[in-house]
Length: 238
Image 1 (tube, helix red, strand yellow):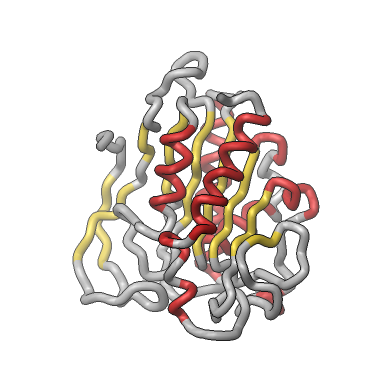
Image 2 (tube, rainbow, N blue to C red):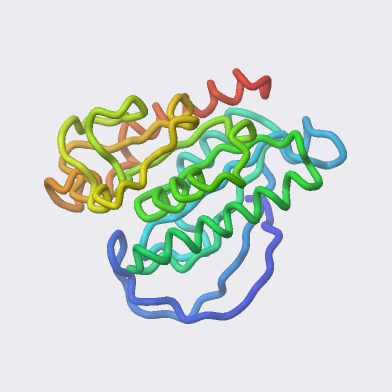
């Protein structure tokens, strides 16, 4: 396992709210930047060729969140020259301010990366509230569309049936936050895999949390990895 570069500060984690449960614990909040399985190779001047930016779901710890892990690792294993950044935000049950806070961190990180590595491309991955983080960032004009090659969303509360970017088994319903009107911008739709499975009550408002918790072991995870890999290769990153 690569050793992450990080900055540390102490915080007290909240009682997990939606996806995970557990006792209140003292943890270290870390800003991770994982070298990809291809290291820093393939870029110029020490720059990564691409980066997978991952935003975790409600209740997941900042350190080593699991909801997106299989997708992130699958992409990094398949395409050399990448790294992973975990979005810094509380991931508590504040669904108005949390996604905005996460989006600000995502945007700041992208801008900082591009200032020194202007050719780096990005794959955005968001699970549950993390999907809201990603969609909010995409609705900010400061995110350069051409630098984002793929977006993968799982259990997106903004999900709506019948959209061209939709993936997964769900065909009806709408997410718990769909009435906000926030949605994937037109410029990102062709490069987005918005995965919502039947019975996920977070993205369809029908069913339970069982389906919402099942993406990491579903066939849709492999499909999403393949989608991101194909998008990277189409962008010239082999």
